[in-house]
Length: 140
Image 1 (cartoon, helix red, strand yellow):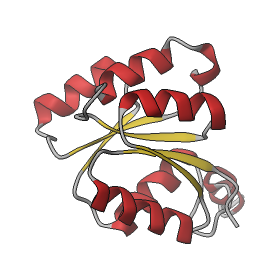
Image 2 (tube, rainbow, N blue to C red):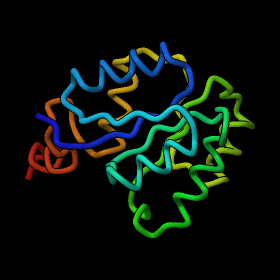
Image 3 (cartoon, helix red, strand yellow):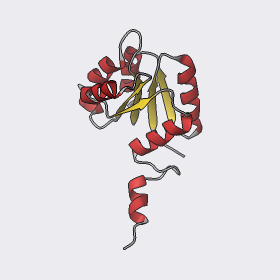
Image 4 (cartoon, rainbow, N blue to C red):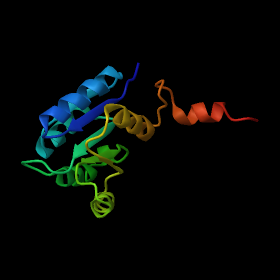
C-alpha cells in the first residue's frame, strides 16, 4: 500500500474525478482543489508529498500558486508538477523556468499519470523505492 499524499489541482471536473479515482485506486491518499487558492490552503493543511497543479484555472493560476508555495520553505522538497493541455515546448520550458519540477501534458491516460507520479516520487510500480530496487538488482 502506498503512503504518499498527492494534492491534485484542476478546474476541469471530469479530469479531476478520473485522476483522483485512479490515483486513489493505486493506493495514494489524494486531496483535491479546484483553483490555486484552494491548492495553497490544501497544501498547508495536508502537507502532500507531491502536488499536481493545472496551469490555467480561475481565481488563481497554477503558476501563481506554485510561486507562493515555493516561497514557503515547508515546500522546498515537495515536487510541484504542472498539468497542462498547453504543452508546446515553449510553454513547457516556461513552466520549468518558473519553478515547476516537471510538466505533464493533458490529457494523459491514468496509467501514464501514475507512472510519472511513481517516477517523481522515486517509487517503482510495486510501491517500493525505485532507487533501492535498482541498486539491489545490480550485479556486484
